[in-house]
Length: 59
Image 1 (tube, rainbow, N blue to C red):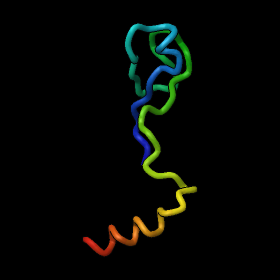
Image 2: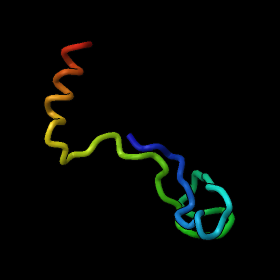
Image 3: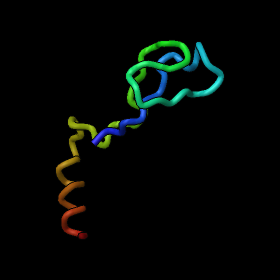
């Protein structure tokens, strides 16, 4: 599940700090906003199946 919090995609060029928002555009400069959270897992992870199996075993 991805977060609803987004960050301005041009904050390094247009702002001196990250600008967070819930909308799809930056409220200050109007640039598109992108999801600020990293992906929870990599679908191409070759060891993901084993990692998830270990998690299930230790619960």
